[in-house]
Every structure is written in structure tokens, then in C-alpha cells.
Image (cartoon, rainbow, N blue to C red):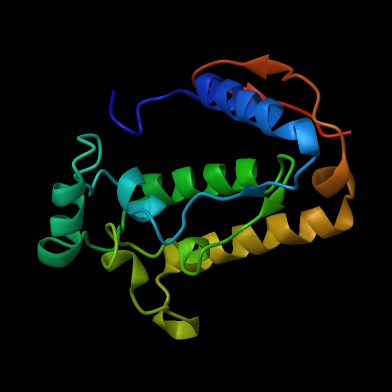
Length: 167
């Protein structure tokens, strides 16, 4: 399977298993969709990465020789919005690697360290992504259950649909 070929149900089940394995000491885990050790989520969601082959040299070469373009289609940004919806509502401390909140493109290091864009330099889709991530952050502040509440078993868990509550 390619890195992106798991469904929501499998993803949720795996994350819950990992959380159970680390819960012994009660650590506060970080939730994230990207970091400095990986290619950018938006580029993976757009299908612009060599990902799926788990070839370190191909991934590094892409960053130097074939950097992915900034996506313009709607679908990668919708996927980004869903990823943030999950990361901002499950237990843990959300970590946002700079640029992920606007869907900044990039392959593996060093391409995942592109210059940040702000204000009028953002595309309309990037501005929408930023507004959505900001709304999720405000929701976490307003509703304590999203940051400190219980996370019971999912109400519905399928490959293309995941419904859970925080109480």
C-alpha cells in the first residue's frame, strides 16, 4: 500500500492503538499532520509526491530536483481541512508545522522548508484553509471537551466516514 492508501476507519483504529500503547505514563501526545521530517501534506493529498515507494533517495531527490507545485485544485485543500478537523479534535496537543495551515506545498527535506506566505501572497484556497484552521483553534478554546474531554469509541467508523464525540 502507498502511504496514503488507508481509510478513515483504519487510521482511527491505528491512532487509538498507539494512544493506548503510550498511555501508561499518561504522556501528553502531540497531534500533527506534518513536520520537518516529511513532505507536505498538501503535496501528498494532491498526488504530487513520489510517496508510496518508501524510497528515501527518491523522496530526497524530489525535494532537490522535482519540487511539487502549489496545488490549485479544490480536492487537496478539502483533504487538508479534514486532516485538520481530525488533528484538532482528537486528544492531544495540536502541533501545526509552519505552512501546513495554508497548505504550503513541498516534498521531503529540504523542500518542506519553503518560505512562508502571508496576506495578499496567499491564494484564495490558502486563505480559506487558514480561516478553517483558525476556526478549529477557536473551537478548541471555546469547547473544553475538544482539548481535555473523553474520547469514547467511535459512533461510526468506516473507510470513508468517521463519526466520534468528545465529552
